[in-house]
View: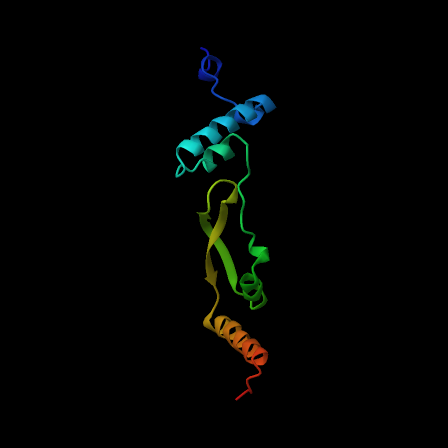
Length: 122
């Protein structure tokens, strides 16, 4: 018995020629001109015309401070902001630690702000 892929192989998004990419890109350009609110990002990604951009938690000062205080930060999912090439996927996070770790993080931050503002310690 023939496999369904032999009869209906589907479209191979991984192996687009440059000419095919240019044609798809032009179709998307025309669509976006006619329908300015249409978000074509998922299709552009599927056709390998652009990559998803993700915010890296390693760049987060807050996450660095959490790590320094042994507070675990886990990514639970993503939320997208922006459209098209400007779209960035930001992580939805949870934090785990005992209250002493959070208190220490908060107190260190308060001290840093007080020092910057030249507020005397009480």
